[in-house]
Image (cartoon, rainbow, N blue to C red; front, top):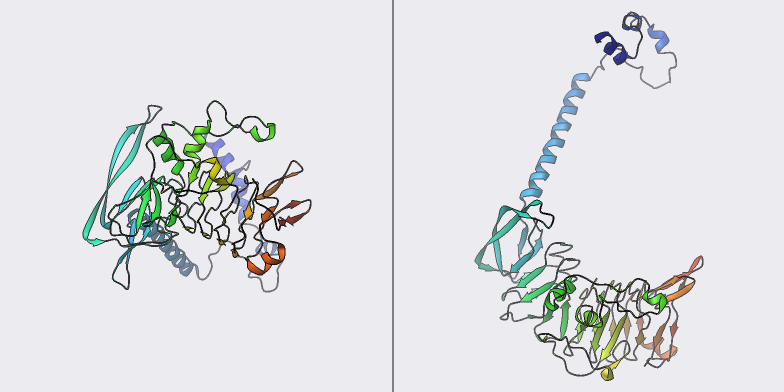
Length: 425
């Protein structure tokens, strides 16, 4: 058996033949083809600088191992909270890096320690799953007064944020792409901010700052829905009733519809990005839709305007929906500013009306909102404007490719603007 293993290992019939022959090959036959400038191969010899090479390789490997261990330790033990003391003496929350299962967080004082506790819990399948519970120690002598841009950027675990009374400045981009965020609550003593049922506003209610991306999950729990429902896939193509036995009109009004309060004059940058909304009601009196204000609302079908007084306070059971007699199609007459990428990728919208008071439309404002499907055009394949073309060109500061494009055979085609149009009924 040993002899068989030996032969297999060397892939030779007779190991002794190989051993006797391997050292008998003349070196001049091995080194037959020489290329000028190419070093002669070392045959059964070590390079002259072998010891130096070994030391260099060892040092490089040691440094690589050290760097790997250092960054592994750094990632595991780095403080999740990064703060900055500003020139004005205020303390800013600059960056929050979720260490794991922190789902709720109150921002009020500087966090001095993060304590973790492991525990076991059964999942729905009866399997034991290990979780980590976190608790925070804070220094109440150091209030957090500002929240930096992108402080919570792309956090996929935070569901609920509480803004303390001392926070006086929140950057518009602080909560960008927080896909799990369901609600933002504000201490009633805060002088600059408030929330309306988990949506962040300025204290005076004139500015909508952040509609949490996963706010529909909060609303489902509030109104007693156990799961997320969607329309049937082919309801548009067949012309059938949109609502099936699970997807009711009440569900869409309670979960996928949002009425912006009549006090609001501006919807801020990124305020409603990625929201799961089908209908948004804007108040007559709104003046500004800022950069990326309603960015990538892929399911958004309608943005309409309502008149009347609605402060935004919620009712216990029934959600406020404007009287149809006080609703008109598309954007309010009071609007003057449509920011860049404002309605980018609103592929389900089929009508937009640019009112006569608009003076600015940013680049790519309606980009990706029209497309070709089944040899036909759907979405915003045309845009209606109140002003005639001459007045429009003279009044409106137009950004690059604001109308968007759609496929037209081999070449894309710009979405046309129909000037001097009346508002659709």
